[in-house]
Length: 227
Image: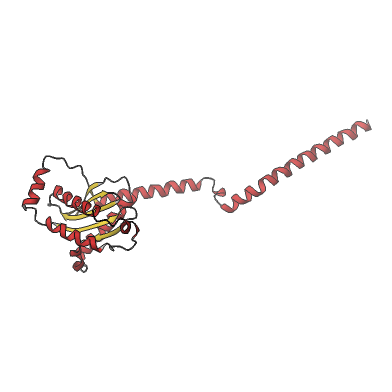
């Protein structure tokens, strides 16, 4: 069965709505754990544009499934035994409902998590249609898509997080190497001094060279006259 649904904004990873069924489960430790993982997954999706628009993420005996469409991410948690094709039918229904909802401005401008309450009620209504996989409507959906290959990548949540950490560590190491080159000039203060005084130093050196040359020529002239 579908146990958790979150709709969020990909741009910044802000959760917009969730199924109101879960409001009464806020004191459930297991629920809070999976909700935190779903929010973390939403953040990872917002930071990593290379992730597929459709993926299944394994966690314990459950699976997170997400669909990204028009910069909105639809995430659902289900038992691992729940038919994946049916789950993505559910996410696609949510996407179609949101497209027809006509609240584009609110979706783009809201800054408060889970403030899209009106759509939360719609999530609950659609979710009820997918609770029982044996209904005639759901069996028809499964039979209709039986011959179609589901283009969905499957990955474990731990592997996804580890790869993200390695990527972040690599970026930091690369930045440290670039900053270590010519560290004396990495100081903005030293750069300002160099830009200000280098031309003056060059002019002084040129004057000294000319003055030195003048002295040498004067000495040569005096010596030649004495001879």
